Image (spheres, rainbow, N blue to C red):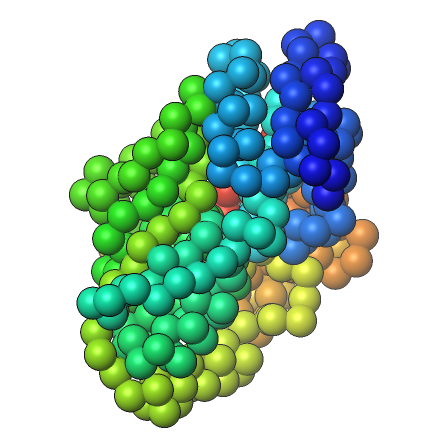
Length: 309
């Protein structure tokens, strides 16, 4: 990543984007790292080198230009026409972790869930083990109230560090995020840049054993070595999405090279040459089948972004 600022450039839409300390890539590929390995490019893929650089960039970016922060794309469908405006990716420099008094750990938003869980284990902080089962970054987890194995981010978050769309660096207490199931009140265009988590005292060996159990359970039940997007649909109240999908006869269902996983029916797969349109259309077929079979309307958990081709 270049440390020198990139000069203002003209977007396809004719809107100029400002300089940034970091890197700017026009028509930046997202399919190179999105888990499904599908979808069109970002109009502008911006990698700021620091929180201050991000804040300066957003403050100078015209308000009409949409902004989408993306982590590792583990719970994301990018449509085949690409993403208008600016996609923000945070650098590894914003993945640092620091243990603080009171069983707390402060982490950068680019850190992976497994990294946070491991650091908490080493520090004897229990209650964060479930992050071992979340394959995305802290930024995405905080935004969507990610969860697994009976816990979610709302159980451990004390505050989130956020850069607002107009370029202000703010600390948001957990209450301000107004968490509900897989949802927060964080506005579009705001970027999570860090989080403060709190657990309880624990024995590192016991914590490690629980993390190993979570890893083994994921290995046994989920298609971890496939091009997938994680959990596709939210669990309805009092039900499991995978069971409803299975009961509707959708296990293994295909549309082109998009498939409902035979291992875990709440996962969609790209078997090789699927397009994002194939994957999304298959998801809609599943929703229709479930609605017809059970009367339940499944809600997407995977974020779907961009425009169709």
